[in-house]
Amino acid sequence: MRADLPPDLGGTRRRRVAVVTTGGTIDSLGADRLDLAAYLETGNRLEPGALVASVAPELAQVADAVEVPFRRLRAHAMTDVDLADLADLVRGLLGGTTGTAGTADAADAADGVVITHGTNTLEETAWLLHLVLDTTAPVVLTGAMRPASALGADGPLNLVSAVRLAASPHVERQGVLVLLDDTIHGARDVTKSNTLRTSAFADGAAGPLGWVDGDGAVVLAHIPGRGWQTPGRFAVVDLRALPRVDVLVTYQGADGALIDAAVAAGARGIVSAGTGAGYPTPLEVEALERAAQHGVAIVQASRVPAGRVPPVPSLAARGFVAAGDLRPWKARILLRLALAAGITDPAALQALFDEA
Image (cartoon, rainbow, N blue to C red; front, side, top):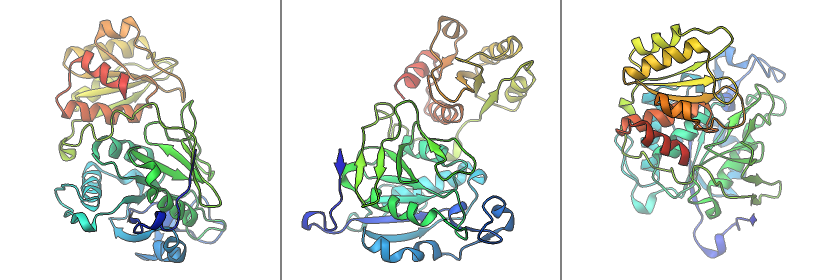
């Protein structure tokens, strides 16, 4: 399905897109133009506002884009407080209620929001926002795999394409999206699959949702069949008071020490990233059963990049929840939100994961 965005939207007003800048590779500076790997160690960044200013003429052809600064962080340094503040800011920009960021008047509300973000945990932020933002407006996360100083930097075009996508009425009601390397991904399935390549992000078996092509066309290949029930499902949850949930990855010979330690540290939930279709070691199973007996919610995921963990009878008998094909770190986010919303019964949690 070709979903072109005419420059004037058929004579209506131009779309307003807020660009929230949170840092990451997209505004980092390396030691020289060939520094494509160690650039984070320089600690240097573009001056505030320089990223958006560098593509201002191109953005002006796409939408009325206004930069909204946020604290600049490496993606792997994001905390619950940062994410809560970011969610509040986006709600305010879209005209919704917010705790700390101020609410835009309806006449001034953005039609869409783009968030620049470091790629290391971009998929987690996208999935969290997908679950907590109750909006029909496009929210698009983008970033870069090469710093702003690099020969062949990918950030500027990623930013322009993301604004084009957020300005498109054809992607409203699709939840949070991710745009890098011309490719449109859904928040549920997108994952970083390469540490260095510009084509670093991939999806599940269904593939990407579409592309922003070289002529500026927004081309949708399909509408997501998974996760569409959940946008904004947990909009009322307090993101500053989420319970502790840990992810434990299995390996040959693993015992239950780390699982017991997570329980001792106060974990209310554990996501087990098992082998194959969700198999921890026998000693880990014993530790998980002990944890469940203490009221800890257990979700069984897989360390394998693709495929499902089915809800086999042994999981239900232990009171464990099957994660399906949700990646372990995304299963953690869903479990934290569910527990914060008071969903603790294994059967209810399983129904949630089945529909997510």
